Length: 398
Image 1 (cartoon, one colour):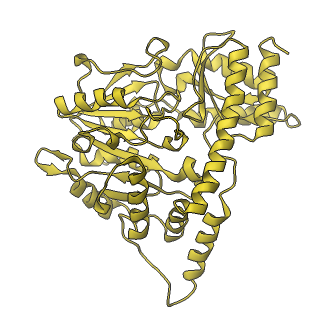
Image 2: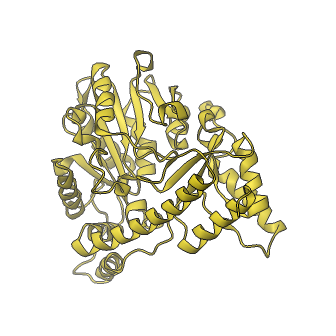
Image 3: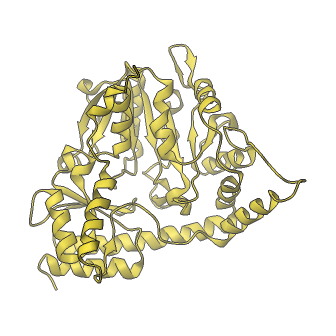
């Protein structure tokens, strides 16, 4: 008889965003003529720059000619994109070998799959609140998960103590959902902790593009911290950087210096990818390459600036309403204490029913998020301004 993976019994019945979609769908059926403003899921709204779509169109055209047609590509990615990523890291004084860079169809896939090269006997440390994929992917594998509480008291930037020792450690900075970002000195504490305990850090840098040139104390990469190549794997994505949420492309860095149990983890990840992954499409990779061009970079910075201005509009609303929040400065997310009510799902329903605005209840990111709520700056300027006016009216101002 076929046996199922009973570890799935440890998961919540619905994935967070599926539950949100269910509630929103029911509301829309009941209010078909009312304008709904979505500020929940971190999907982008600005169009992909023309220099990037031109590169993808050219790549697609190549596939129609026998002379330039390409079939299966290398599972670890084409060298033209890996070299572009290598050059990008030099902006942060980080030198990578091309063989350490693996192109993927987005950070979510690799974050969820990286456990394949680690034993299920490992203990995992995850900050709470947290991106649900970190937790669910480990529960699916039957690993023991420990939580480190992020809270208002530690500015949602917890640091490890001896009792927090674990084999695998997840860090996201700038953080999803809280928007908080570790300084270089704080990350050094994590790196030193991992090296002391022979742990491996899984570092999610999906939102590093929101760190400005003026933010010198906030690292774009964990590899800016000495010793990190010996204990950390880094994930990044073009979804937020370039608006690739529908195109799909990202990259993972597994350093040559990362060795566990005598095994070079880069080699294990290569073996895993060549077995289970057919590679990211050539068209997507040519588009991603154009992201790093001078013209592409300028256009993308314009889009990032647009979202950061939206974040300022949301932050001003929170300031005017005297609501505690984190995020917004280095992140498209604003994470705030639920006003009026304590429970985030209750506030979700209040905001949906009385203001026709969709956000994300903090409880969906973990127990420590129960009294908090997340809004994103990825909407249009018009919708962001209108949503803030509705929230001001709902909470007693204006």
